[in-house]
Amino acid sequence: MPTTDLATALSDVRELLLDEQNLVRAVAAGRRRGVEPPEHERVEVRPVALRSGAHLQVLFRSGPVVSTRNVPAGEAAGAVDDLLALPYGNWHVETATATLQLRVTKKGEAQVHRAARAGTAPAGPQAHDRAKQRLVDPDDPVFRVLGAGGDKRRQVEAFVRQLAPLTPAVLEQAGPVVRAVDLGCGNAYLTFAAHRWLSAQAGGRGKELRTVGVDVREDVLENSRRAAGEAGLAGLGFARGSIAEAEPFAPGERPDVVLALHACDTATDEALARAVRWGAPLVLAAPCCHRDVQRQIVAAGERGPVVRHAILRERFADVLTDALRALVLQLLGYRVEVVEFIDSAHTPRNAMLRAVRTGSAPRAEHLAEFDGLCREWGVQPALAAELAAELDAVRSALAGRPAGDREAQAAL
Image (tube, rainbow, N blue to C red):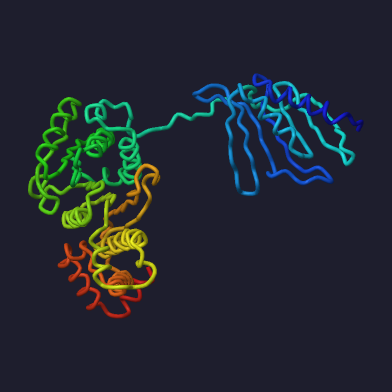
């Protein structure tokens, strides 16, 4: 194959890369003989249309590490010149009508091959900003009525996304009236959004949703009642009371869904205990601070470098508290997952306990793990104290079961 001057060939590549209406994509890879290899193994270039206008997207790959830079069209010439100055051995450029292959020879010259393009990918800037499929409309007038900012809306959307995959089974099992309660509802952002979404799901199955937000502050509840009226949300109500003594529905009417978003410290334990005693089929709780266990760790004295420093002790207390909560719920018949429900950039309190009631028998190894953690760290979690009678029954059941039965259960 004949060769040509490399600078001339790269000038042709430059012209193609800057033709945003006809460029499909370009790839630079390989190394030139006798020179230091470029920093990245491969560079990919394509035009994209962002909300802010046309850009040239440059994607750098080095093994599994990928980074992306979106260059505004007005700055593309400089970025392209920088790329062409890198010592890549091969360029592959696709346009709307043709394909160009450039290979740098051992002598530093260029071999160029052009052909008609066979691909079907569209040319020019392609829409790159994907419309997010939201479960809760961020422009819902409910948020305007409540005065909820962007971060709070994102937290609520993330919370409802954790609720969504678990809802169908709950709605299937529920009667004609589905009941949900938000314990420690505060300003009720979650209460409103969850009610809005759950109401649509229940209605699609010919069922009615009733939701109650519970809080101790009457002024907050009054604002929520007013907002619910302005938003026209039927079936949504608010009741004053403590989490520990909450009775949101008539006697004999248990909640199907129990929610608790950022109830402080042991208030989360009160919410979980309430849910367990109701036998709620679905529980979602995103804890807030974990001061109770942290205080107990301090009171128990020095226990090594993991808790010697305040910041490490605080973070470890978070982990230990939620691990113990998960074990208690498992012992009392729930399948439990502890998940991250939103990125920590929005809130550092981003762990969530998702619990689905299965009614499964308690397992001896879970009790052993629970007792071992409590003994090792000198703590007695609030949830265990709240549900002391229920856990005593578990201990009695496991102690009275023949060894063979325990081993069979542990193998499940």
